Image (cartoon, rainbow, N blue to C red; front, side, top):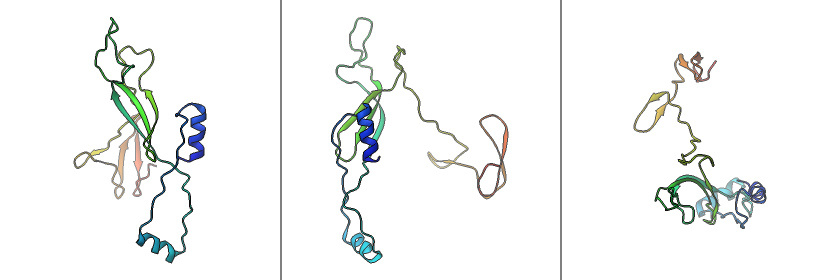
Length: 151
């Protein structure tokens, strides 16, 4: 993410307002020599930072799941955690369930569309070298040309 965009998000309250200094990568001798030969001169500062966001079930102290009597149940609640990879600090922890949901069910953001089963966990899309008919989400048929485009 661009540092300017991150700063806008911090001012808006999406992320904690902490200083983020992008980690600068050190070029190896080989890369430095290749850069010198090709005439490439890297800038002194990289203005992009890397944010890592993951979805996890956590049992955070002070935010425990409670039963009717107010006792902690030990059930982990779904959260979205964002961490700056550059300095390792937590930028945000947001709950990943609806406020009115008493069961605190996780909101599913990701969808896995599959065409054909492949090796292990991989799924194979439409064969781009063959003419095929594919059923789309609406139940209709769409033609796929040799380049893999739906026409």
